[in-house]
Amino acid sequence: MTRCAIYARVSTARQAEQKISIPDQLRRMKKYAKAREFELVAEFVENGVSGRDDRRPEFQAMIDEACRKPRPFDIILIHSFSRFFRDEVSFELYRRKLEKNGVVVISITQEMSEGPGGELTRRIIALTDEMRSKEDAKHVLRGMKENARQGFWNGSKPPFGYKAIAAEKRGDKTKKKLVIDAKAAETVKLIFKLFLEGDGAAGPLGVKHIARWLNACGYKTPTGKAFYTSRIHAILTNETYVGMAWFNRKNTKTGEIRPREEWIAYSVPQIISEETIQRVQMLLSARRPSRTPPRLSSSNVLLTGVAVCEGCGRPLMMTTGKGGAYRYYRCAGKHLNGECDGGIAMAIREEKLDELTLNALTDKLITPKRAQAIVAAVAKKREGGRSEASQALSQLRGQLGQVNKRIRNRIDALADGLMGETELFKEKMAEAEAEREEILRVIDAQEAQVRESLKPITIDQAKIASANLKRLLKEAPPDLKKRYIRAFVSEIVVGKTEIVISGPKDALAEVIAGEPLTHVAAASGPVRSLVREWRTGEDSNSRPPDS
Image 1 (spheres, rainbow, N blue to C red):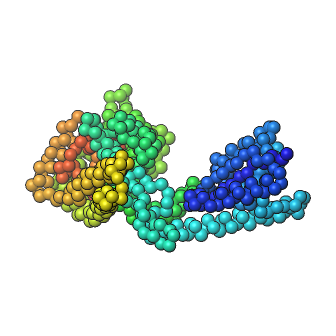
Image 2: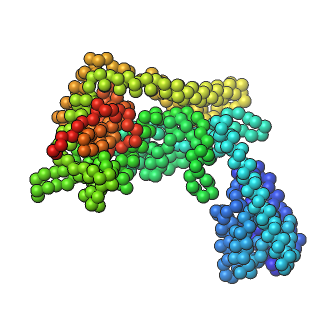
Image 3: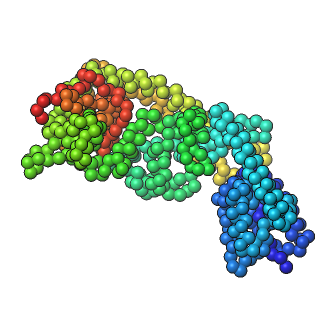
């Protein structure tokens, strides 16, 4: 008796959930096999996967079985050739692979004759299925793009810290939007805090140490698993947390990033401030071994990694002369390759550049008037972003209303005798109450964040803050001094006639305004940025002709 296996497949999760197409395919194929007295020896069912590639577990299991020797079956029955493959080239490759082992693929709705005519017909059908699949995919993508433009979530797994909820109904389709998942969002904020400030017992934690800390404290991912380094890094680099998500960013088939103009942006509730995200990205970039070797991050040289040659843009590296008696910052291009692209080939005594830099910071940058102006500018910028925090608060209050409604409905049902006070009822009520308490806690924290702002300071306060910061820069131990400088210096460009120091306003404003200095004092590694917000001519220092 001829032995056969049957293979059924649907393309979407919705088709799988409706349980219509798969049972119908199986029923028809079994009927076909019975009518021809085939012995049914195996079934392979694929739910919600595309037929345009071979990344299908059941399909691969079937191919592996069919290619065994001796072969376990002689025929693979499919409803139509499109169920087997929607790509003509791949279809033929797998069909021939099976044919070599004596296994034939038969469609119960598209029977082919033997010989060249049947093969031609089969190829035409496969090409038609491939074209239809590509057309369908094009229309689906177009619909998903428009869905994103209208601010709706397209159904993929939400980023950690968010959840997708039904926003509105259009016909038989439910439109979803992202809202903050209160408990997960708190974990996201904690991860950023651990990275920048630490847990209070030590300085900032690296990606690996954050994963260990969370696992040791009992934190879990949404699936109940432990945190791994890759997930922590993904969270720290996810721009969605600033309140903006992107659709159509990546080609899902090839994994390649699409051109920026093809991305579609839509607003989501904000969890992390833009300033925090930027600071984290700068630190991650600076600590990347491919950019800044660990020996530089741990070096006790004050300006290692931030001082660069004006001529070629290469870092200034530490060299010695006279048997180590003298130390110089020297252009790495000249020292390592024998040439500086810009022809300057900077070299300057270590103590001279350190002194010039500290003098520039203390005498020209950290002046009371400049400090007051920087704090005022950043405070104004932050005030403009408070609406995003208010929007997140509104989302949280909406979630609280939904939870309260569920609780009231259950209490009303119990009072009306529609349900009993069973263990399941008690369990569901306890879950709802716990969720309510968690949301209330997050609302309190969010309200405090909305109330918080970087307040402008008076000239007298600026004088005190400037004096304190100058003292710290001059009197701190070398390692601590290096960390302070990296907290608000992005780059030091050293040229023949001037030295230009640049950095972000926000970091400096935090320190001057009296924010806690724990994250500044413990921050390690060069903080590099292409945004030179406080670079001005009066911050430049003429370099003496003899160094």
